[in-house]
View: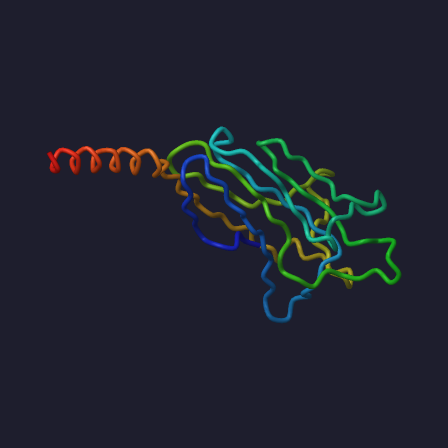
Amino acid sequence: MRFEMPSYTVPLNGTLDLNIVIDYAQGEPSDLFSYGFRVEVLDPSATSLVSLELPLALNYDGVNDSPAFTNLDPAVFGVKGTVDVFGAPVTPYTDTLLATYEMQFVKVGTVELKLQPYNTLGPTEELFVSGGGAVLDDLIVFQTTQVTVIPEPSAAITGLAGLMVALMSRQRR
């Protein structure tokens, strides 16, 4: 399980759509009935969550129906859900996109984001279960990404443009 990109660059106060995808090894079940993960931000003051979007087919919370269970606290950013258990028949999810976190970055520097399991019922909770009932938790490798936040270029460009206008008007005199 990984972020779509191994690293990102964004201007200060800019936003990024961070797609979370799951890769299956050859021979593994490649469909999901349930899932649960979170995005750990090592410096929660460096970012804020703008929105969390889930594929419609994964936006269920088991017998609690829709939407999926979320905890959007900056220290958690967790989501856990299932496919529609009331569908006839219950259809497993076969795509690889699990979620899109839109995040804003408010501090210059490097921000590390880690994917982690999102257990809310204890360490024995089974999160990733295939459509056929196979527990995939031991097969999931949670990866990280780094976001490099750079100063807003607009201030530097505005200053440079002003300097150029001043030099050009001086040259004309």
